[in-house]
Length: 236
Image (tube, rainbow, N blue to C red; front, side, top):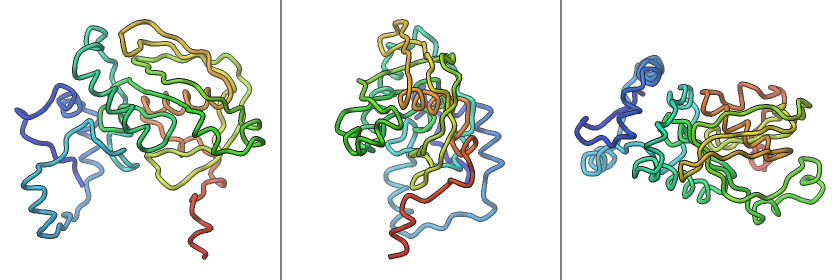
């Protein structure tokens, strides 16, 4: 179904970036279903009263949404501390924590801008047994915000571990990633920031950098490892 936008006068600055992005316009038209989506009366009434949602969304966009396949645009450095970009960062952080995930990018909330946040609190780390943490080189890290990030490889050794994504909800697959990378960009205050990430943190960085290029982990996965995380429940 094609993306439905409100009247231009109602758009925020971030929403206008989405509307004006030619990649999204073309992808949206290509992905449109020939059938019109049928809504119940109450769904119709709710949409009439509340109007269509506009990005940044309060839910994570799912695979099939054209924005996930668009090339994210850089943020003008002078706008980093402005209210629109700051609101986007706050939305990403809140949604990341609510969804109990370790990172989230702007395209995943409908905004094709080069922004991602990452955080690995101890409480999420401890959900994995010690042997898994050791094998995957997992370690907690505080909140990181990167705007207009660039990445270079520090250790070209490639390791493959199971990986998931809130935009491909309910599935996982083994994905080969470099063992260590450095990411550099602007932080939420518009200051230069860099991070040398290794092990699981490096995997997270590479996953988010892919999102900014319109790439999903399913494009890099070892296809025979692709699995539903609830496959065993279905057999019960």
